[in-house]
Image (cartoon, rainbow, N blue to C red):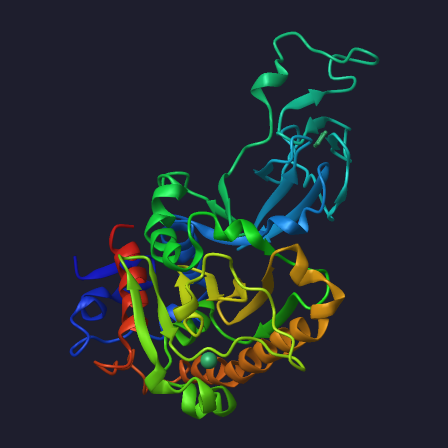
Length: 391
Ligand code: FES
Ligand SMILES: [Fe+2]
């Protein structure tokens, strides 16, 4: 098959899938066309595991949060048993949007229209007057048939992932190559030490660009000397290496990470991180839309929320190591970690938005890749192309 064709969409996939020296990138249509984003929702983002939010935002059992993802109304709940669940955010009766704002609801989600109620595991629990005034049941109507429609989901590293198509297979199998790789730093249980504080942990960046450009920019270190001159002073281009894991994760690593330091105070590090590898750090894109950063003394997650073909919101959360790291003693360290990432991600905005603007040009036909510096970027393009190919 040469091209992905869907209505007016025609993407030359074969040239994207060629070896990097001969390959072209995805053409402009993949970045500027609203219909293409709709196709991606079905064939790319919806067919795999995509990040939609953070479990820690569901602050306690009984809490619910609506999330509109690519136009789909979803609702995340934290049940009484402390389990995260994800459902389509629509009432089974007449289809009213069920939850409009995040809040604590206790044990039941009540539809504002006719007051049907669901528990936070999605079971329909009450249907007032369904059989007539004061008759709350109806012949032939079984609540068990009309619960909320669940969405396949998983929680890993505080990220709530969904698989909209429901046929992506097990999340545990999908993530295994990355957890195996990172067990060299984290041991078997390192992620259980991650903590986020209400301050010094969050950042939101809006970019006027297609979501893929944020991923592509994250995949490469090539731009480091030109876009991040301060970062490049200690973590130089030559201190980086490419990461490509199976068909699904790509990015870069550094051998020159500087542990946090604020007036001689350093953040706690992961207990099993090898002493001789403290300067190593890895920056991995979990395709399609989750960017991960792992250092010995903190990690971060950025979820890229596609708002339209040319606008995305980046949601960053920083996680520190162990309860102690959230003490006031480390406040200066946490602030400097968050500030350093704020600067880096802000520096990336002009690059990403400039690429979006460039994709309005008929003089650009997907571009070419450096056969040495752009391998993870090409790896991501191939991932997108392969998803489109089987669509
Ligand atoms: S639409 Fe929800 S109860 Fe009627
Ligand atoms: Fe960058």
